Amino acid sequence: MSEYQYYEFLALDRPLNERQQAEVRTLSTRARITATRFTNEYHWGNFSGDPHTMMERYYDAHLYLANWGTHRLMLRLPRTLLDLTVAERYCVDPHVTAWTTRQHLLLDLTSDNESEDWVEDAEDSLSAIVGVRAELAAGDLRPLYLAWLAGYGTWERDENAFDDEEENDPEPPVPAGLDTLTAPQRALADFLRLDADLLASAAQASPPTPPVKEDPRALARWIKGLPSHDKDTLLLHIAQGHGTRVQAEMLRRFRGEPDSDRNDHPRRTVAQLLDTAAGIRQERHRRTEAARAE
Image (cartoon, rainbow, N blue to C red; front, side, top):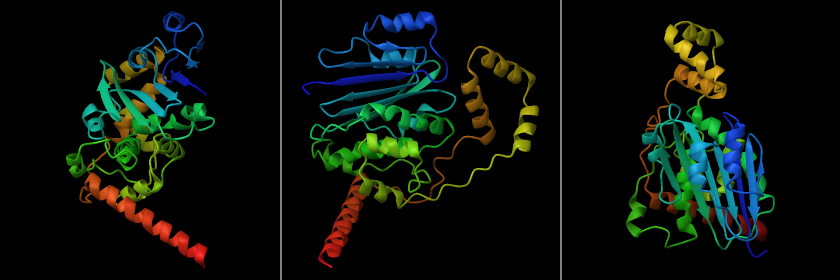
């Protein structure tokens, strides 16, 4: 295989109308386009569209693969569901970036590894990963921490990935439940090539995930107490085709904003995380060799 690129975009909150589908069709005559999905692959040449612009205007999720080792995931969420100041804590240029439009916050997560062999069926990754978007909307910050950790994990395979002084950068707030990832979070970690030992190193400071029990009676009382103009606005948005977003926003308001600083564990530096991961790796190799000798 000399060259291969794969592009996939998904519209999750609201399908594209006929005008919008016609607009994205001008970017590629060979792409497979429906109201909710855009896919195309290239064995020569390049895609003429700009994924940033397509995400800002039309889509909620994007996956890109190239056989020279690039893995890229982009997600779009309503700004009411994830604040830019929260997302920026987990940014690692150029591996994790975030920006906003008038209505949305967008995340760009990238992993590069030119020496890695091509992974079969990698084109199916988006369906396994895209659930992290709903988790972020619900206030689960584990996907952001995984992306941050994978970004600095690049240092383990590329000693020139960062400047030496960046090894003293402190980690962002550590969310609960890093040792009990969901299936979409595991798929994200694999896609971003997050080393298992580095994840185990980070999870040492991650408390257990607190149980979440939704009380339907409390939710009903909360909805009943909403001001009339709020209810009118929410119903209007539902009628305009934004039902999924309204549901997420209402549940987020009901549950309250996530407390990303709840963990009292001292913040570790990038160097400490990498050193601990190296120790975990050495101990695992020692146990493996001892088992073989026995």
